[in-house]
Structure formats: structure tokens, C-alpha cells
Length: 470
Ligand code: NAP
Image (tube, rainbow, N blue to C red; front, side):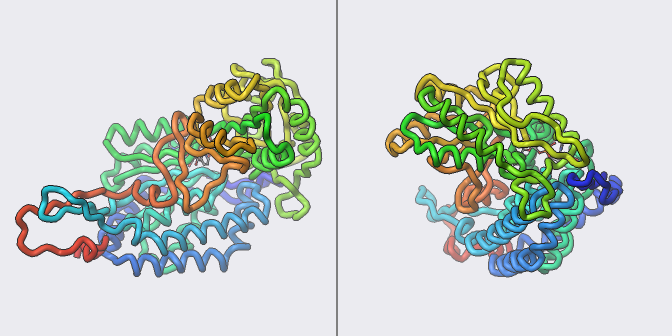
């Protein structure tokens, strides 16, 4: 497993994958750590989670540099990502108790309530594109709920993976509660089968999600899947065109276009399509791509040369199917995994740029006849992660947002994750939700407690996650 700097093309380091025996020992240690951790009170967990936030803020520059070196993220975006992780830790440190406190339910019982118990050791299979954020948005709620975590990160960001384990240790979490295992994707099925693992979460491509869901399903372990997307940004006739163009440009190029919720298909009604396209291409022409360490770069390289080459093949295939190259589309000479900001016009269903996810800085512009046609096109995708609508009419936006097949719809704004709001997809974009109160309930046992003629009862309020188990 090697880390290669996508700016220089030079190898940073080789990492030896862990042996099966070493993984088995680490899983056992995780289970032991879980058995003690599940009995802790929220206050203790919160204290450590706040420490993790503090450690990350203190190490912000170092962690941002690690991301720049291993996957090409520009430094200011890396620093923002670290801050977002720290806020996520703070959020769950402050709110986990509230989200997971037992709920009294009236029934024919003398007293009945719902309690939320941790599941155990959860395996997280994670991608390289937001190497800290993807992990923390799983880890902060999962650990606060009383679980332990095993991280199998993408093979090209092993340095980030080890740094994350180190952050939790430095914050004072018990050894074994959050552990990184360095193994390739092909070893994941074996790990899932280990009886210590009680559930699996995967953020990554749809094929990887299907493979993990199949393995976990065969041993009846719960999965949460955050997969690919081909988000539609729908620009309607009454849109604020300046806002729509700026937002659509920004959303397509974030993280060099390597974001699951980046805008990928721009569906513009006929009356506005030509003007939208003209302004959009002008802005793409001005994007400066280059060294992620330079503050003047708008966009860094892609994460790996093989991924860049895949994107280029998708662009070429789309052109051969009739799409029009409006800007970009040429691999620059020199080292690194660079790809220019690229716009394809005249994209239609049946073309690669419409039907597949393009995980790089490539925009597909699609003309719709009218509002109804725009929604039909938005939904004509195997994916259903996010979507955006541009219109000045709130009532129309509310109505159409309910017709769009996606896990979230943003109006006059670009789709983003926010720790306070649930995040996830439908269709081939996966299932389950992360973040907010919904996310923390994914890896818990929602337990009914029913008192028949019990003589002495505790009030549900007295039964905190830890207290219930003492
Ligand atoms: P990927 O190739 O699917 O890899 C993601 C993770 O899954 C890596 O840790 C990888 O390990 C592992 N993996 C790959 N194949 C596997 C298999 N057959 N069984 C078990 N594990 C496997 O995806 P990626 O290229 O890293 O990331 C890009 C994709 O992730 C895009 O499709 C993007 O949309 C999606 N994504 C989704 C979200 C979301 O929240 N919905 C967020 C970010 C990214 P190795 O590295 O060792 O192969």
C-alpha cells in the first residue's frame, strides 16, 4: 500500500498491510475496549470527544499538509476540513446525551420506554476524498453512542488513517476503542465475517458498496452505505442567473470535483441554457489549477493518476457519443494527476456524462424543455444523493423539492453536509443517514423496555446509556 504525492507523482511511503493475525488481535482488543466503554457515562465520553476537537485544532496545519501530500487537497480546504471535524466532535459531545436519552412511551404497560444501547465494534470502510471528514462524521457519533470503531481507510491515505487513530489516543480515548487497520479493499469481506464486528459503514463507490452489503448481508450485519452521486442542479426560468452560475461553478470544482455531492449534471431550461452556458464556460476558463501548497491555486490535482485517466476516458466517451467539449478536456503535460476544469455541452441521457458519476472537475450541461422536463431529467439517474433547484418562487421550490428523488434538495444553494442535518442518499447512492440525531441512531440497538407488574421501577430519565448497564 503506497502513498504517492499527486502533485509531484513521487512516492511518499510504502505501508506494509497488516497480517490476518494482527487484524484478529486488534479486533479482539477493540471488543475488550468496547466492553468497558459501553458502561461509561455521556459526561466522560463528551470530555474525551472535546479533547479530540482540541487536538485536531492544535494539529490543523500538520493534518492539512498530510491531506495535500497524500491526495492533493489545497491547504486552505484541508484546514477547513479539520475545523469541520472538530465541530462535529463538539456537536456530538454536546448533544449525544439528548439524542440518545430514553423515551417514555404510553402503552398498556405500567411503564414502557425506548432505550438506545450501543451495538459494539463497527467497521468503517472509508474513501480518500475527504480523508478526515468522512471518518469523523462516522466516528464522533458512533463513539459517543458507546461503540468502538475499526477504520479501514482508502489505501492511498494510510498516513491520514494512522493520524486519525493517533488523534483519539492523544485525546485520551482508551487504547483499542478506535483502531486503524491497514488492509486493502480485497480483505474487507474477511474482516466483516469476524464475529467481533457488529455493523459496517462504507463511504465510497457504488460497486464497493454492493460488495460490502453482500458480505455483510450474508452474515446479517447492519450496513450504512454512503455511495456515489450524480447530483442534478436544476436552473428554472425564474432563477437568479448570477447566483445559479456562481453556485454551480463552485459546487462542481470543490475538491477538484471529487466530492460525492458535487454538482455533476446542470439541467437548465431552454430559455436560459445558452446564457448560462456562456457565463459558466467563462468562469471555468479562469480557474487556476496547480500546486495544492500554493495559495494562488483555485484547484489542486486529482488524487491519483489512474483516477484522472478514468475521468478523461469518460470525457472522451461522452464526446464520441455527441457531447460538445466547451473547455478543458486535455491532460496537461508534466508530472502529477492534474486535470483541467472541463465543460461538456449538449449532454443527453444515454451519454456517459449523464448516466455515470464523473468523479473529477467535469461539468455536464443539459437542456430541458421546461420545468416538468427538468425534473424528469433530474430523476433519470441511477443515483439519488443530492440535488439543487434555482428559482425565486418558494412555493414552487417546496413543491418540486418533493418530486426530486434524492436524499437532500438545496434551494438557491449548493448541496453540503451540515452536522445538524441528516445526510445520505437513496437509489444507488446508498441507504442510511449520517449526521444529526438520525446519524447517531444508526449504530444503536433501539430497545423496548416494558414493565408489567414490576413493583419498583426506575424512571427512564435515570437510565442513561451508561447507568442502564451498571
Ligand atoms: P472506492 O474505490 O469505492 O473506495 C472506498 C473504500 O472502499 C476504500 O477504503 C477502498 O479500499 C474500499 N473498497 C474498494 N473496493 C472494495 C470492495 N470491493 N470491498 C470492500 N471495500 C472496498 O471509492 P473511492 O474511489 O475511494 O471514492 C470515490 C467514490 O466514493 C465516489 O463514487 C464517491 O461518490 C463516493 N463517495 C460517497 C460519499 C457519500 O457520502 N455518499 C462521500 C465520499 C465519496 P482500497 O482503497 O483499499 O481499494
